[in-house]
Length: 334
Ligand code: PEP
Ligand code: MG
Image 1 (cartoon, rainbow, N blue to C red):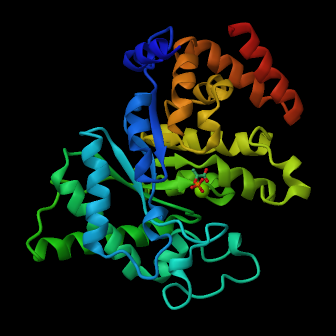
Image 2 (image 1 turned 90 degrees about the vertical axis):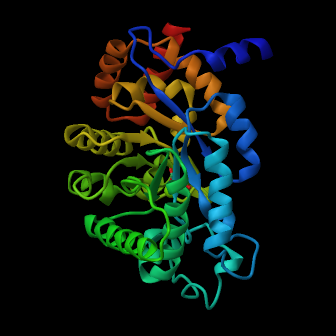
């Protein structure tokens, strides 16, 4: 088994009809870095930077952030690393950012409150430090090796505002005499709210790439908090509403030719690979442990089959029927 996995690591994630699929890893803590190399990931599609802000009483300064990001970017040796700026709020409560650092007490419904980019635009000094650190790390990495990702976007203007801050930080660094990358790293948007998904064509005009976050997209679309046991049975990323939003966002990205990936839990489910490829997705970012099985699935698939399968799935209205189709397709392939 171990030898088989080692062999798989060196094989390309290529479908039987020759389509290459990019398989990347999500990283939550730097300690997971060795797993990423073992899994044979082609870069990090989602670096969650929350770890830097947890379990401490002050904020990590620019130098501390440069050290943390460069350790990761260097370990990836030129493979792309998508650094998502702080996604604080909602269920991601962090002691360090309590009173005085971010506006205290998130209100009656934290998931609908000051979360992710909303919080950062309210406290731009947090975003400025993080952008500065990322730009400095990108300057020392190969061109294109670093990308920046904005969490919890709902309107195009949020991306525009973030980009204004990004450009301003770059100008300030240049004045300070810091080395900057030749062209600034791409600045992308998470598509993880129904609003962002349905306005994806408008957001695509402001963002350099999309990362579809299916965990939050399903939660916000279905109005179901997974932590609420009483409604957890309604949490279903295969609900047609979630799939239609993913399809709309993917097509918007493909039309305007910006990269699009899926980085929620769905991306690590080997059974769902045919559906995601059939919808036009060619980049998946997942927990490193899921990567070998997903690669195996990719290598057994034909894109034309996947596209036909996705069309059938998208005609369905019942999540249970969709689940059935997914397992039937899997059984045929096995
Ligand atoms: C998501 O919401 O799907 C996602 C990838 O982001 P996170 O799980 O960090 O909220
Ligand atoms: Mg999310």
